[in-house]
Length: 602
Image (tube, rainbow, N blue to C red; front, side, top):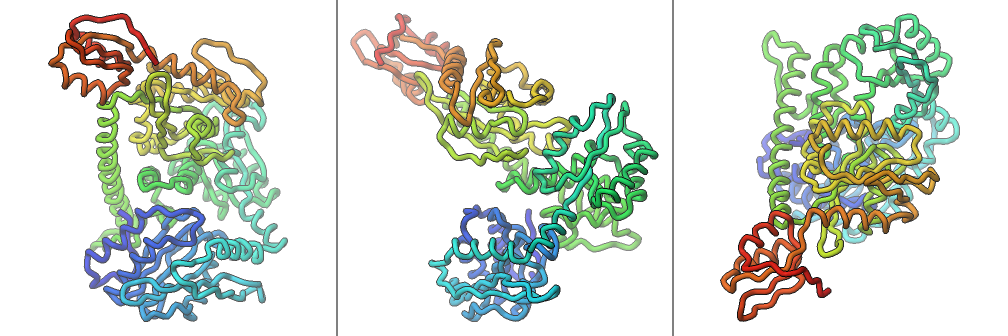
């Protein structure tokens, strides 16, 4: 469970639970804040006399909820903080108990020092939010000083979201003049490092570059070493590592990203050689991307669980990295160090407890999903799951087939959370499910954490394997997807290969059980829909039967779980024409007086 930071001593548990509910609230990213959050913190402040603070990121996600005293604001250690020459990407919204929305000097100073996107104060009266005043950074006065622009007070019911967002974007540009932009690029410069059994140039690091781009890094250079396997001590050979040190100085890079997961010993030894240069391995990079992309409560829990499992064995000498992890860490746990217990042992104990709590919460959500899945199975609606390599175009394909607006970006892992939509086909309907994209060397803990989500493929009747036909590495990507499907135990299910982006590749695929499409332009979509209909029809049975007049309950079941085309009650019995699952059709035939030729009058 997410924690409430700050001064919670003496506050009733019910009031704390009210604040904790804020973490569950969904908010439109275009909104500056939603009324549900404002009403919740207003009720808390009225009941306790204490300020309540909510910290939101630019996607509308709640980063931190905190309680303070009336004369000060609690400042969380913001893991979104990038540099003094950039806004933090976080806005703070907090309450003022006495009906006055005016920003205090403490509010203004916090806005300046933390480089918040905005600082908003809410006037509270009799437990209701009345008005809001907002402060946003203005012009740069000197190297150490900026001005503050004040907006409002605004009535809670008429907050000008567009105006405030425009001012935040303008502020972000104002505090990053050309010199600052150059500094920003320098801060984000990274060298990508990998090994390959055969020297193939830089191509093997293309995917790592895509990951780095998605995470916001500027790729300054590459280094490959032909090796059968990584060096146990330094990943690269020691001599090659010394070359890397020279390359860091030459390219003025401050980060090195490795294309494999590093062991504790490798991290320690490499860090000794590289000094202050930041070390990131492939697993931590993917976890970072997932932590920024997860938008639902379940997604965040799954990512945090994977982060916790990754960090636990790597804490020796690096326990300060805990501050980078959302939801975890020492703050708010209430743990105290016992006699003879080191800080490292305390932190390990905290992480293990957090890991157990996360697993229990995820199991609870999985149980709820199992109930919904059982309901779907009772309704006999076929399930079609989209699977494939990340950035193959699954979400774009889903949008085209269903008319939905699932987020699509030309970045890895644009979609993390399972999305499902119902479609009609032939004589029935099916559920189309979009799943998280696969990738080579996907962290094992991440697979386990997302197993509940990936299990959607396990219960699917048909898989659509979406393949990026324009990718030079499509064969290797197909192998990765095949291996992961085998790992999940679903590689024996019916699969249609969907070669997407055929408008770019210009190639035609005529292999069995495959369709070439362009999810962006719509080319080949009719053929795909026909292939889905044809495949699902093999899993359904069309039948026309004569049932006894006493079969009313069975007919009701058929109406609820199949597609009834025609039904007439006559003297000799019930004449029924329907499309059912193979199992239900077998049951109906067993109860029938006789079976007649199928006749679809529609």
